[in-house]
Image (tube, rainbow, N blue to C red; front, top):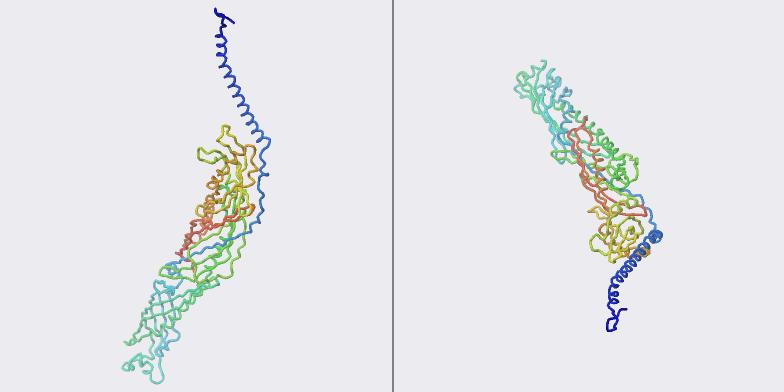
Length: 544
């Protein structure tokens, strides 16, 4: 050590060395600390990886024991179509015009007056255009007619007082003139005019027929002939013949109407169309292929209603409907008799749809909605849970939602996390207005706590957030399936629009309403109703 002149040792170099050594020591300590922290991080990371890789969570250990539910019984719903068939009175008039003869030709075989008992009266009558009038009590068909009569033969002679025989027809002043004509051959002609009115009070019968209940009245204007300048009214002799011919035509028409099978034939054709299975698709919606089986069972009709424009017959068909996983060929025997009822709601369509959806299909729908999403979604939350998978199981009156999540806590510097399965109970509730299935009364499954590993605190902390998120997000959207079902039912209804020439069917499905749910261990059943309107207008009748 160097000394100064006074003999005191020089300490400056040693101090300089100590001063120069402090920075190097601090760096060394910092490096050691960083290395220790890295070792800790690597240790924990490696431990976490090892736990997740070599000791994966066993979902079966944590899964609650599910109580087996009885299988849902087969369910059919009642459906019906009530269609008012409005036949225009103009169509009835046209059909009658084409059916009724234009001319009547006859001969009076039983003259009323004794004066003409030896004369033959032949009549030729042509009718005019028909008019059909409707009123609540029935139909009135009227037509004018005109024609001519021909009187041939002789005026009758009577033993005794001939003048007395024509009393009331001729006065006594001309009696002597008539007496001179008894041996004279007659060939006289006269014009006749009148109207025919036919009334109908139609009634529907259980034998699928219409009983028309027709009756006719003939009104004849006075018809006179001139014999030797004497006018003789022969209307009373002509009317029985016209009555007979008109009544014969009305009786023939009544028989044709009574035996016309058009109602039965039409309903048989539509009955066959109804007896079928209709594909409701499902593939595009993620739901299974489903078929709607229709099986008509009853047919009913109300007595006809008549107004100034239409003859309306309201017909209803009741059917049983159910959803089946494959196409079926139902048997639908046609009823032997038609049920005649006082009245029915007019123009309505209702199709009941019990829809059975397996949970395997619903799992795909729920997973598609949730997989890859992060909860909670708001920024700054202490945890983050990413959904990797979803599953639904049933037990008792609740469903168990199992979510495979990757949960991370975001408070610590290490940002620890783990894979876990969070199980949450919930009761399914149908939201009919929004056509979705919600889960209410959500609660964390007690056994879920056992599923968390060493770092499961992150997943455990995420569970309450997942509960809140499920209340808003764990829904099964049934709208795509409902829309698809409506489209398919609407296409089927279109088949019923093609009936016959002159017949138009206005049928439309307007909406689908969901009314309830039920489930067993494998299937969720949604009960729905499709509703719409049906109206039939007939502007042309087939030949009678």
